[in-house]
Image (cartoon, rainbow over all chains, first blue to last red):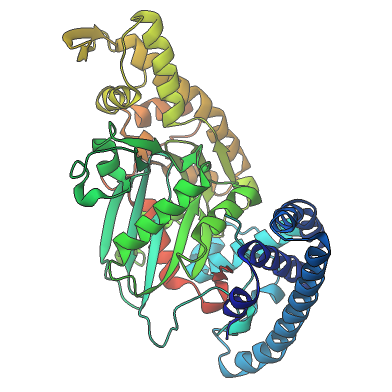
Length: 139
Length: 381
């Protein structure tokens, strides 16, 4: 059963939202994007948790649900990241072209048009440049 | 609605546990690629399967959603639909609440944006069975907030997404791939300057054979809608209580817009209060459109100044205007003359041509077909 399907069975919709947001926060932290994670935790997450708390019979129950969700989502993300860390190198070995990791690519240099013409770079190379710029901007 | 999204490079065959989005299984669902120019006033959709050059859908749709008002008699709206889109929504404006998903190039009405993207999906894949990956154009220098708003709206609608600045996509779309290797062909991706004038923003971009950096792009929140605002102001001063709707005004602008010296008399027939009248709008339209030139020109010269000295002469030969603003009469010649008058070496400003509404989407579909598996961003729901 998928994480979403499982959650649908166990939690009411407001808490499912809380879980989704917390999962995103965990992912961001795993990526080292702590500021962005904190921003979401202070804003979107806090608002969703307050809504879920309002929809829950008692504060005690709400606290319990929140603890449970946080623990489960944290564990789920950690497992997913660990799984990806094992799987990606395996896939990279089998599919070297498709799994080329752009995160390890050198930062794009500003190139003169003539050099670019000689290189005849493909669209995918441009996209790599763009993604690298996006990552640099986030760091 | 709160949705969880995450911009993350997907592994080559992303483990399903990384995403809780109910994505169709690739083994069961055909993959369909979309190139989408999500515009403030008009959006363009191009769709096709991967691994080919076939285009299965090519549509320009007004970016508007109409929510049918309560109490409308059965049968007034075809199929008693509750939500209408594009031309259909505009044609039923008496019976719907119109919502525009975007303002100034970014999502301003998330619910309408989501409904509009669902409509786009329906247009691209009427069966609803395909896994859809979309390359979506964003204004040059769009911030993370604007990008995240698009991703949120697309969760559960597209399985994967890539957001790419519109002027670069316009260059890709404008490029004639069949001629790239011909010696006499000037490849716009190698050395050009694109000016994409849309409804919400005017985007300028140096395209010089590498992906444009933030310094190579300038986005100005002054474009077709801003010209509309100026026109309304001028018109109300010249013809108070004219009662003209924004849509009528936009039609007049699209039919008569020009820049450069005054083209008086420019007589336009309109119906005001049920009576036919002829208004002289030469100065009204000219003043509003010339303001656009005044806004764009400094950005244009800024980008030219940033080009390397050994590329700038060729660059000046390849200044290309696209988007709805390219339909303003004289915009190419006025910009070219202004550059020449300011001493720039033999500048040449061209219009992209009849497919001006489609180049961004064409470029987006090309990018979708070329994107590597690990470049797509998985939308987490």
